[in-house]
Image (cartoon, rainbow, N blue to C red):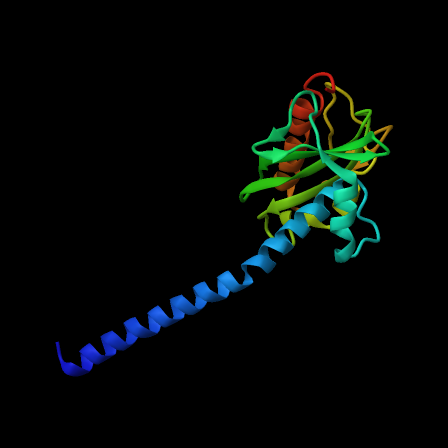
Length: 202
């Protein structure tokens, strides 16, 4: 190997090593902030599903969460794929549950929380903590208008939610994203059937 080629080869190795080290150091430096933001987003998602997020700033999230949210068992189920079932507790009484869900959409996993009131008669909210659907199409399930439809929907054991206009509610799919919209309802109904209405509340 010629001297010039050796120099170039060594130079590239050194530069690569320096860049890798710099990136690793930067990641470690930002790791606490990354973890803090991740926790904040998770807590905000839980509060949203329970209808408790309105008007809250980032600084409000942790105090409200710590004061109002507790781990819970719904029909003896304490977690869904390792994510805890949570309860909104006020004055010692359970007001609502945040039920984690985990399903599959068109382009990947679909994870989040479905909120239901303590009587298990209506939803309090729906939020996604992870979705990888196409922006402008299936990704619109994360838009406020779509998620807002899942507040106050009547629910009961053995009855699945569906898109359309009914006597007690109206639910619209995302135009041009039939498969993603169907995946959301399939996942929500699974959470209702397998967690919310799996048996009697413990």
